[in-house]
Length: 217
Image: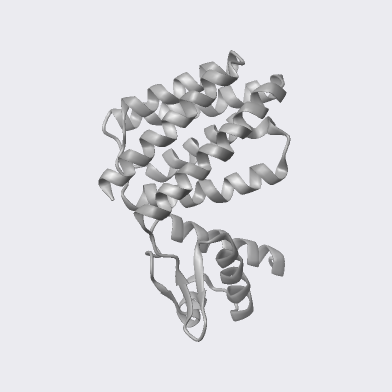
């Protein structure tokens, strides 16, 4: 069955965004429509719509008379993204712990289990599934805040998290046992409904991740 125009557009958006986040389209790269049309098998109108959407989210820059470029990276931008993530994610976590029901707890347990298994592989020296690792990491952080009760907050956080992830993938190095322990402490504090402890560990987790990424930048 042929895909609808909406499905094609959504698929093109997801693929280009993924390639920007994971560095297949490097920062500063000029996004030539002819090349993109061949690479993603999409029409010019779909590509323009996709690039404008990515520009509105900050992953692409639309420059007058020059076309589209992958948004450049900088230490200052990374620092600002991390600081905003602390503000949004810690607030969402507090709301989520207060609102979360047994379904929220079950989803959180499942998300942490998948992440922990992947982290054990990484600690054992198997880094062949980096994309899966980051997906499980995202699913865990999303599960923590899923019960915050605000779709606007969740959508803003998702864009911010992807921006932060792009920097991590550019200089991908694993923090190891330290990050695993932070995830465990966040998980346990959330299940204990200890709002202050969970938010404190989350802030530490983001700030240490920032320091680690800046050091490798």
